[in-house]
Image (cartoon, rainbow, N blue to C red; front, top):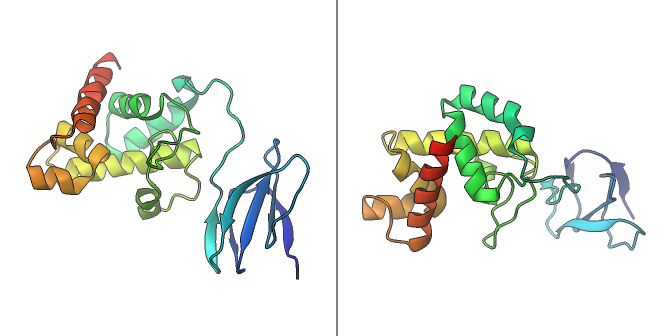
Length: 193
């Protein structure tokens, strides 16, 4: 039996052997248990698993992705909520995604603060491309890392980039060129904010 639902939300619960979500340019979505060819719609999610919460992995196009002022409210709110300076949040976002909420890294990190799906799951993020969810989870994760590394910003940033394990293993910033450059770039960017 074909199950098809027109939705406009970004996350639903759906029990099926296969699940397909198609999205129109205006953001409307069709959820079905079969592969379809719907004119104007593109496939944005597929799952062969059953009985799971599904997160849509693509958002409608964003005009002017590098504009940080679009996210001022979310950054200020996350800053107040988690006690991380707005300048540091902005610096992380700038280096991670250049304020592009649809950014996807070659390793699979997504959104403004480039959260990996596993990390996002720890903070109950349903849509990695939603700026508010991404900024709140990224800032909460940064707060967690700051606490773990005794408020040492450089170590927290290194862990944000490379993971906690390498920072603990090396007792400092790991000797990874990417991580060293990342920490340096974020610290410099932070000064400009």
